[in-house]
Amino acid sequence: MSGQLPRPYDDGNLSPLASKLKNREVAILESDVLKMIIDGDTTPNTVYVCKAQTGTGAAEPRWQIQRIVSSLTATQEITWADGDGLFDNVAANRAALAYR
Image (tube, rainbow, N blue to C red):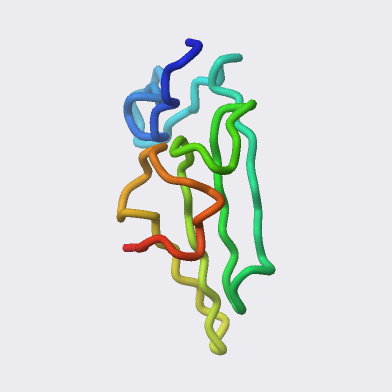
């Protein structure tokens, strides 16, 4: 899979269990192993979780980025860069991206 972007973890990467229940199992393949950047220092009360294929540089537009904002009431809001789970963002710019 060299040169291909990883897929978001949706039905493209998940297969239903044999029982056909709503539960799902993730298909883990060697080419799907991801590296992560977990940043809780850049923005107060915010954690950025950035995922990409191993070997991807932080300045490459090949990252899936999630933002988790904690409030004073212990509530957490989880949003995604560009409002989607695609691997098309730059991790180095995580604090400046638009989240929905």
